[in-house]
Image (tube, rainbow, N blue to C red; front, side, top):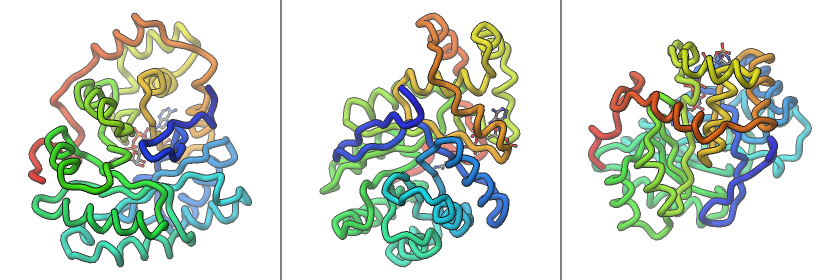
Length: 278
Ligand code: NDP
């Protein structure tokens, strides 16, 4: 396994397990630099969203990288304003324009919105059928959302992107997704900006044993769980360090010790999808 190792989605499209997240990176130089450093470090998967307001700089960094577009896996997301405003198709086209590309690899509904999600899914299906996205999926869905979506869709979601890290390991939801062929992507894998996860003493002890950082231990734990993981950083040294996760292995006991750090149902401030109707 290395930085180029991919997972096969339910429609056969290959997605790199390691992606570079760009949430809260400022549009302009900060995003251009971060994405450039990520691509130089070997990342071939970038995760952005219309809500992050940095698609233009992501597009610029991709174009300037000189890496052929087809060697990169680009995800963006349909934001709440277009979901509630009925402007899903326009939202998608705006993302394509900002990213300066004629397709995205993965297009996701950013959050379910009560009474609107199924209607949005139909638009995603239409975009998929037009060939301008290689796969479609959702974020922040729990089992009952996915049940309803699967019952009412022509095309099953390829991905569910969820808050997931050692303090919120969501094993039952991950097992549900695996059973139904939906790939799980972990957002805020390092506990998010301003989080305390990286100071966890259990992670630090395992890290010390392997001569790694707590961040590298978590990202390795994600890989061994079979999850796609999306660490974000604006620091070149960290962007590089977060790729150094392939040449060691966590034992079954270490994996278990990390699962035991679970603090469910505690979550980040971004919200609890269990409270959202579909
Ligand atoms: P992460 O869990 O990736 O954590 C980012 C924080 O960790 C930043 O403060 C970063 O600091 C720091 N960090 C990164 N690497 C290291 C390291 N090696 N050592 C120490 N600190 C480090 O948080 P995000 O919330 O950004 O989540 C990751 C991605 O997931 C997002 O960027 C986005 O793509 C996606 N996401 C999706 C959501 C959704 O609803 N679908 C919601 C939230 C996130 P610094 O930058 O200063 O290096």
